[in-house]
Image (tube, rainbow, N blue to C red; front, side):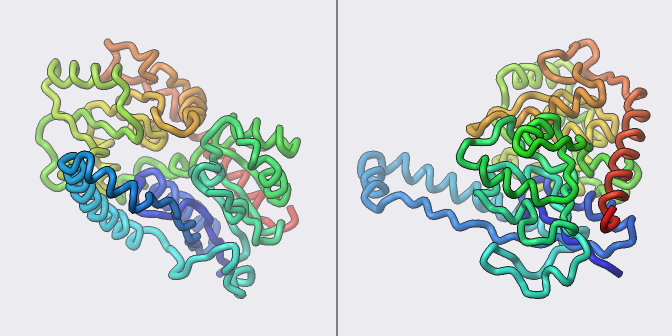
Length: 369
C-alpha cells in the first residue's frame, strides 16, 4: 500500500491541532493509502535573560519573584500533565513517525517512502509559528508529490521579510488549497495563482464519526454547562455575558483553558468533543471550537482573538460567512436566541463543501492529473 506523509504543526497542547491532524489522516486513509504524520523538529529557543538581570529582580522584590516562580512551577506542572494526556490521545489515534526531520537532517529514504506529501491544515504557513521553515511548504519533496490541503496563514498579510521566500516556496507546490479567503488573496498576490478555499478537515468527518471517538468526561458536572475555551484573553463583553447567563440560568462554568482550574484543564481531545456536544452554550475564540459547535449543533458565541500577534480572525470570519452563522459572533448575537440556533441550513452547505474538498483531493492524488 502506498503511503502519504502529513506535514503539520506537531505538539501535544492544542485541541484543534490534534483533531485536525486526526481528521486529515482519516480522510486520506479513505483513498486507500497508509498515512503517517511526519514530525518536524522544533527550532531551539535561544532567548535567555542575563544572570545579572535575574539577580537584580530578586534583590529588588524577592517576595514577588518567588511568588512568580511558585506560580510558574504550578502552571508548568499542570501543562505537563495535560501534555501527557494529549500524547496518550495521539498515540491512540494518530500514526506519527518515530523520527523527526529538519532541513539539515532529512532521512535518505524519505522521498522513496511516500507517494505524496500533504501539508495542512492548521496554521502551517503562519510565519510567527513556523519560524521561516520551508519544510511546511514541502520544499524537500518533488513538485508532483506536493499537496496543500486547506493550510492557514493565520494572518491577513505576510511580513515583508518573508515575502521572497513565500513566493519561491509556493511556486513549487503542485496542488494548493487554503482555509480562508485571506489565504487565497495572499497566494494570488504572491504568485498570481487562483486557489480554492476549502473547509478544515475536521468538517469532512461526520458528527457520528467524531462521537465514535469522543470520551465521556468522568465526573462531569451534573448541572447544565456553560463551556468556555479562550486561547487569548477573555474579552470583557464575553466575560460580562458569561457572568450574566451563569446566574440567570443556573449554569456551571467549565473553563478548559485555565491551568488553575485543574479538573477541567486536564481535559483531553476526546473529552473536549464530549464537552462541546453536551454543553448548553459554548463561548470561545477558537476556530475549531466554532467548527465542532457547528458539527454538534451546539449553541455557541464566538469572539475575536485577543493576542499579541497580528489578527488571526480571518479564519473565523470565513467560517461564519460560509455557513451563514455571522449571528453567532458576539458583536451580532441576539441574546434572546443565545441558546437557540437554527442549524437546518448548514447540512446542505456541509455536503457541498465536503464534495468540493473530496473532488480536490481526488484530483490531487492522481499523479500527472
